[in-house]
Length: 277
Image (spheres, rainbow, N blue to C red):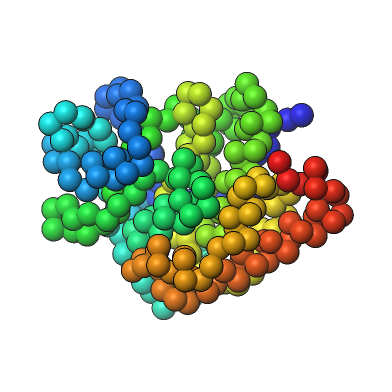
């Protein structure tokens, strides 16, 4: 068995990536990950004092890496304040997108949605906070060792291939659900113990009702499938407001319906053991 990678289209998107939260390496070694709950991380992000800041990456979203302290704990976070809406956005490669959004709000919505689906350990804790007169999304810094772009380039193999494939299957399900138009391999981070983190969703949550790449959906975690199946409009709207509009939530649920139908069809064709794990 070989480790599953993201689709060829997903890899190609790497060349089109306009921004990444992790393009610049840290000027200092990452500190050990503190043993905190998601709630404690969120409280720290909201209230800890910013003691250092430096801009990272070269993309148009201009994220900042902030070092925060509450007097006891010192930890980093990523701050993004981009919030752009355009009737029509023209890309350098000639493509166009209508009703274009590039917004920090979607980072917050992605985290809240991930929690609803039991994927809070895959998307970093993210809150809304003001910094230097700007409102933005502040995300917990993950002490990663590789980006998926690096892993694939260097052909690094995970020690447990099946565990890796199961994590990647969750990433693909989540990416289809949120319809991230800028999904790329720099936004999949891997820690030293081969845990995957999915970051940067500023160009997700589109109005499309169809799936972007249904061919990527070949396996699904059973618990994730059940939570996906049970998602309700009211529940998603309540957890993601004011970051997602009613129209965006409706589109998300339409994609959910198609994903559920897709997996049910695969089960009928291949058998449950080949699709669900």
